[in-house]
Image (cartoon, rainbow, N blue to C red; front, side):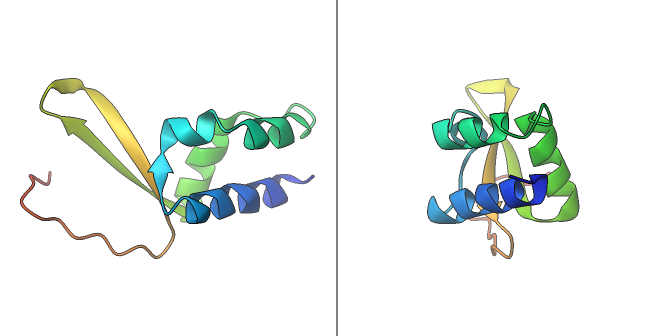
Length: 90
């Protein structure tokens, strides 16, 4: 499998889940198994960063009041409309 095909698989997974936490992708058994077949090119965090830079997926980073020093992230399909209701945007 080529890297571009692997990226399409990631996009499909995010769409199927209608968005997901980063950890859900990083721990996805199928993605890990397919990624391992990429001849050493597999490093999911780097691939996700590349996809974000390309605009293939959207990432929302947030912190919770109970964990202000811990950044969490959530991935959404490209083209998602995001609206804020009652929160604090920076």
